[in-house]
Image 1 (tube, rainbow, N blue to C red):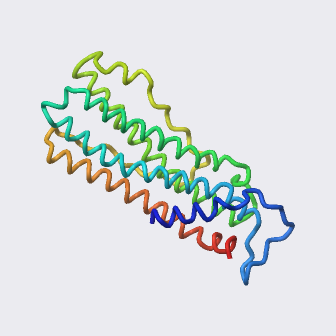
Image 2: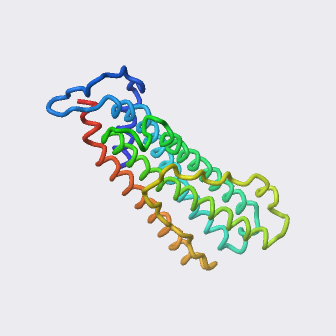
Image 3: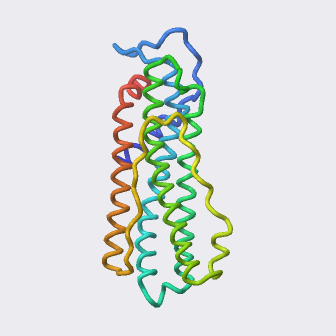
Length: 234
């Protein structure tokens, strides 16, 4: 699925994002593809897909870092060392980057070319799929940010002041969804118990569930957009 998203992003990125307007939809074979829909595809959908792909790639490494973090906090020798805040900061940086990737899609949704009152069914379909992808991307970034914030609070309670420097620059809060009609998935937080075997299983199940939900959302969006993509790229 990820490879397909990359190919689509590469295919669309080379297009002129603002093709010359036409009073009538362009005839492509036996299907009429509207020029506005093709403009949205290349100018807004493609950058959004590229942002989603980039975020997916970040999460692959973040899942590894989360497993490493669990090993550290469940090791009595490592949990009090600099390895814990260092690894958590790495996770936070990735979560912040994922948040910015999600906001790229949010900005696309705010573009007047995909306004909710546009009278073009293909454009409205594109908007709906951007909303779906945005909802899942933002949910993932938000739950990671919440995880980091909870762990920082836990460290502060364990040793007041030791990690104050790490909390002096909090992650920016998520931006509101624009006219969002698609419910965002709820991932919750892993239930860590301080037992390495159990906690590793928890974190692995958590990251797997997040990955499955994101992949399902993106695959569904791409399937829904296939006809528009085909019409704009005969």
